[in-house]
Picture 1 (spheres, rainbow, N blue to C red):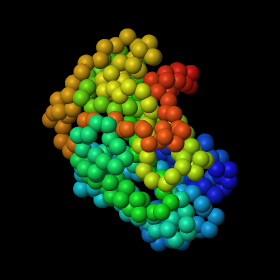
Picture 2 (picture 1 turned 120 degrees about the vertical axis):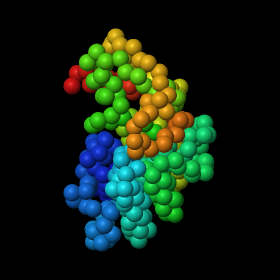
Picture 3 (picture 1 turned 30 degrees about the horizontal axis):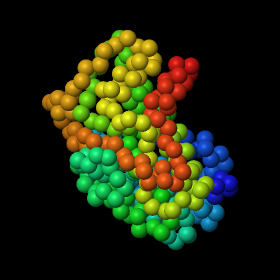
Length: 285
């Protein structure tokens, strides 16, 4: 892909949106303050004439917040209704849509998750994202990327654990949720690979490669890489959230099968390599 001016990044101010803007300088971009994708009239009034590719990085990702009355409405507006608006425009103007989904569209019973696994979301967030997946799949020209445990700019798990460790806190971290981190740099690299090589349209799992690990083991790796001398105590998801209200159910197995995207010539970087680089960058920032 050479003409960045024909690329339109939606959700440009989020973790992934910022990384996409860095990858595609000169691309058009919008966030909620410039284009409300949940408003059908606003989307239809937008000038789509020069757009050939939509990169949809917009999502309501507050998993527990989506369980509230207000959050449920917001999750469905952004993760489903807004997607229907984009799909409608993509159909009308012959635009390729790149859409980011999640392992939360599955219940975590299959390991690893393949692209053709039946949808089985446990939470409101997962249900709203699954609805978006179904809408995107109707498009002839689409890349639906399912990912997991995203790490980029802004608040994220790695920064939270670094902060705790640097304060001398030895955290209790869930050890029964297993998956792989996905750094936004790797997600952007996969998107660019699919577009640049005109890979077959469809659904692709995308995460970093390497051995799957629990959140607790990932925390130990974070502390080792950052040379933080704090212990990590294993706990279960049930125990961690015990007594807390409004907690969404979470899939325990989040590992994505990466064979399909590997078959296109894309070689996912080991999450441990990207984690080490990320922590090094944090230390020097």
